[in-house]
Length: 252
Image 1 (cartoon, rainbow, N blue to C red):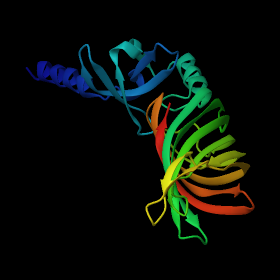
Image 2 (cartoon, rainbow, N blue to C red):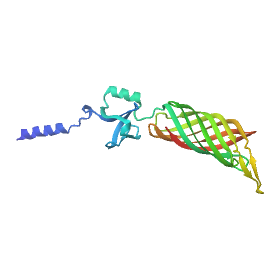
Image 3 (tube, one colour):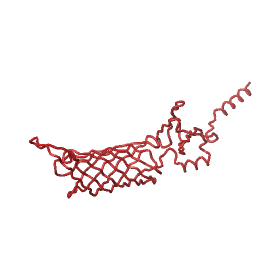
Image 4 (cartoon, rainbow, N blue to C red):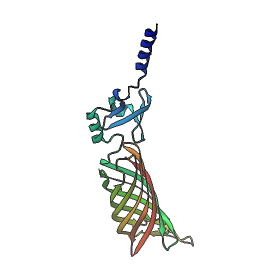
């Protein structure tokens, strides 16, 4: 009887021994159709709709099923998998290839002439080289106050820096150089006495320069939000005009 109890105790003890170093450790791996590979732990999966995964960096990603090639579990201890992870930078953004930004903003005039400012709408597109983006942009703007009725068409080249280029969230800096076409529209106007006259609006093209910094936050590998604050100056006929601007938009 004692022998049987001793044997049973040994079997139970053996079953309770932690398998730690002898057990395989696995992680979830999502292979995307665009060639990216994301490693982590799947925390939510809605059949036929989406998969949510948390990476080792703490980032949360949600992928629709039409973005996914396959979902697997892989052995963390497999050397080949570890090498692949280093090459693919798991769960992080590689800012290489085509990048674009659609944005809207407002420029506050700094100086004489009644203040006011300019509303702008536009975008930038170009090539990402990891920590650096090189591209060109154009905008349409209209003003009020000092710039009332004036239309603006800035065209510029942009250099942008990503200070944490492989992260979902990164501070940015940018520098713009270009030209700005500005002018008043043609049309009929009236003076304070009610007299109408036809006015042919003047236009001018002047040098433009700008720069500043901001934040980019990617919610998906090819979709995010971009916010920036900075300076823009341009030549308006014989004057040099200074502005402080805020910009917000979508990055893709």
